[in-house]
Length: 357
Image (cartoon, rainbow, N blue to C red; front, side, top):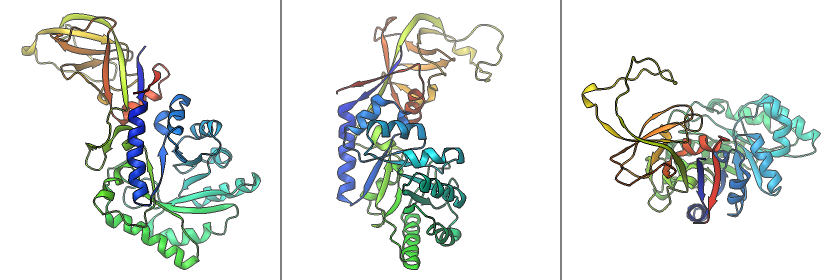
């Protein structure tokens, strides 16, 4: 059975690096745990690091987190859907919001549950995903402040995730300015300015992060050791906290070109081949396929190997002359990108394991 493996020591070292960086700059942060898809095995590994806040976009995952440790602060990091309002108040200590009517429902439900629900109001700064339009922010806050059992815990923004709009000093200064305007007009303190995700981290070392930005929510850089801003690895972190292992279930020397009339494949693609490049090589079939993960999100650790095709349940790996001497039953090791981890974690057919180091 194919399996994904988390390396505990490398995760710990990545966490320590980020935690020290944030502490040096008076920044609080939460771990974005959605990549784990509610896996108790992996959530326990995160909690063992001493994490105080966990952020997720699935309420079922927050419910699992609260069942493992009721004292961890949970944050629902997308605008809540109406049908989840009761669960949001029950399992999320705070949530990201952009719609007044939704916040009104959260207020009514918080009153029913005799709780105070915290909200972070997201502001649109150019990414065109979730966010209150800038010219509406002041009026929006004026209505929100009057709602019972709602505490405005901060302002936030999202950048990069959909269109790739990068954070910069100007955009984050705008976010800080709105907080200052609100505090001055309404005489209310805005505790958090959540302007930071993984992509914003490099602005800290460059001295470009406004000092009022005091909250980050981080997933990708913790798990992959990436400088997301530049799409490069961070040399002080591990890029291989996660690995995938898939078993060879067939190994044969076969021609490189298929034989027969060509039509569409499983994914609807019609492939073309250069008949002049016909040759043969050792081709391994491994026990993982498109039901588990797209081949664009995984890469063999052995640079001499190349994924040449995928179907629903199997992938074909070209071993060339098989100089490494692979055999049926051997495991092939893969590095993963963020979407690769997410897809594999969301797949029940892939086993989840932890190694100490």
